[in-house]
Amino acid sequence: MKINENFLNLSENFLFSLIAKKVKSYKEENPDKEIISLGIGDVSLPLSKVVVDALVKASYEMGVKETFRGYPPEFGYDFIKDSIRKYYLKNNVSLDLDEIFVCDGAKSDLGNMVEILGDNRIIIPDPVYPVYVDSNMMAGRNILLLDGNESNGFLPMPDGLSYEESVIYLCSPNNPTGAVYSKEQLEKWVSYAIKSKSLIIFDSAYEAFIRGDYPHSIFEIEGAKSCAVEISSFSKLAGFTGLRCSYSIVPKEILNGVFNKIWGRRQATKFNGVAWPVQRAAEAALSPEGLEACHTNINYYLENARIIKEVLDKYNIFHTGGNNSPYLWMKCPNNMSSWDFFDLLLHKANIVGTPGVGFGEAGEGYFRLTSFQTREKTIEASKRLDEFLKNMRWYYGRKANKIYICNWWSSIIAW
Ligand code: MLT
Image 1 (cartoon, rainbow, N blue to C red):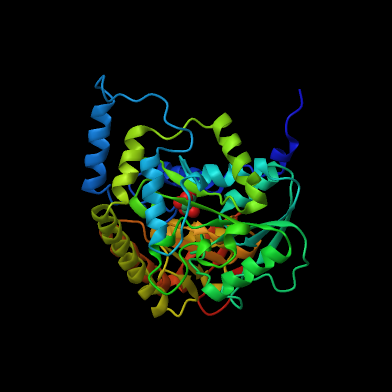
Image 2 (cartoon, rainbow, N blue to C red; image 1 turned 90 degrees about the vertical axis):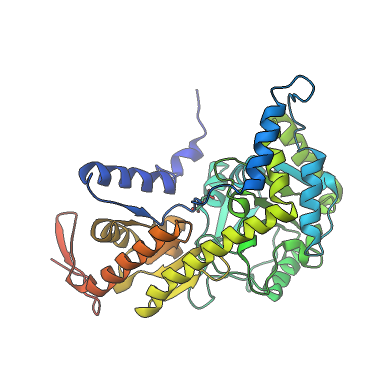
């Protein structure tokens, strides 16, 4: 039998699986070390009371004849779609219920949407959440990476791109860099998409972290409903990483409704809906009380980000993010490579972060830290980071049988 050989072109492990493997083997060799993870963006605060109450009530209903539910509607119950509709109205975005598709995670939708797209040019900013690149590689697509760097604030723009039908992935606030597109910048992207007959896939999973004057949704931009879909999630808004609930907005204006129709067709065939208790819990998260609890938790994470930022500022380390995002994107000291810095930080400070190069070539030499830990662990990690950066020039690390001296003021000297 033949396999899809595109899969052989992928790196052997998904980024976060590779990190988990490395950390596991370090723990096995050093069982006495207390490792703090500022790596994968997984939440540490528990679900809010209003969410748990809804979850418990709906779970009990599943055990009672009169209120038991079988298969949920593939695209979500109307009550949750209506809550999402109202959530968008706060930003003056109006949606029809049949433009909302409830799912079990933004990652699933981001990966699955490739299936209903033809062989277009794929435009992806680099560095980026690895799912966009990997899922397009699996489909053998032709990918054009746009470099994010310090001079464009890690927010690549369409300037200079030829006008060719494309699928464009944008994530704002960005994972991994925490950078946020302004309204004017998104207007340029929307106008490029309209002119080039392209589609924008807008990942707004981190919108609830926005505190400044930035768009929360691509649909705040005029014309976006004719050229963009939006994928978002309850994971980072309401701490649903373990519960699983997300949604995609697929406007009917795209290709006269055809895109909305075939996405629905795809979902109805390959997806059987989100569990009743989870949809009730998601509805509770979007209630006024639920949103208040979400924002209390998000403020807690943003305060964690501020604590980590303070250390980076102290050592004048270039970084983005942390103000409107749970992620801090820092330059590795001493021009170290991302993986060398990962190893050194793990071995010398017992902190796990995410190597920037794991998010794409343009991320080489950078490193991502998350603010999703508990306050206690964030404070402890910040103390360790402070001490680590202070002493860095004295640290010795071992890699590939070479000894490196890491000197703060010069490059790594190897011999
Ligand atoms: C991340 O760490 O980038 C995210 O938590 C991963 C995800 O959302 O799948």
